[in-house]
Image (cartoon, rainbow, N blue to C red; front, side, top):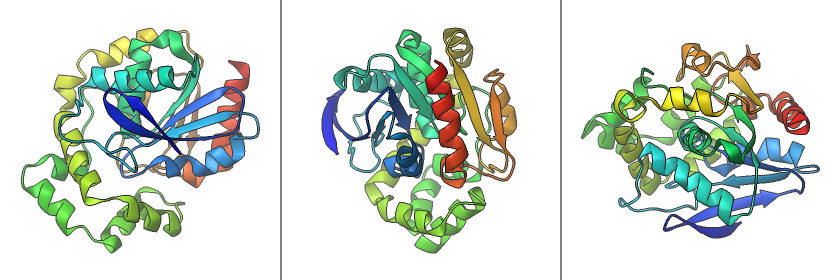
Length: 265
């Protein structure tokens, strides 16, 4: 791990391997560890960069951090610049989608390729049950405070039919009270119809000539397939027996898909 300064915060970055740079952005409730199985399969020929997003893992923030969509993309750009990644192969998942796809919309010239795992970036997306709870004042704080290891693990296993219990148990240990507080801030800011208005159109235009692929777990209870289709990416690999965490549920196939895209880009 190393720490680098990005937009006034110290970002924890984990790197392994050498070769074309692949930047992988995780979601909620994960940290960079969600990418470990892919990194293990890619590091022999690729430089794998997996930061902890602001508020997660070892990247700590306070309430002054700006969660605007533009700033989320600017944070990714700052990371690309400070690490000297040049044109980068980008992979995004869940909350990391907002960060990475904002970056893609603003700085398409810095993208060598784009891989979208289960993520959304459209103003008419509907929130899943837990997101609606977190967005509610008082109720969100209560839900986070009363969350137990058993409930957390159970919900993750529902979201990922092939997810290993050991991963969910470790994710719980890293889901600290401070992380949960910042999760509430992010979900409450991200009022899709307001903050994402026009961004989906801008994204589609920006990445029209960028080699891109979607890797999608069909059994995801959080993000519907209709959201995936809004990306208008013709190269879609649907994993019929996977849920929200394709990179953990089918790491061999996911790594092969990314490597193939990187190698032809």
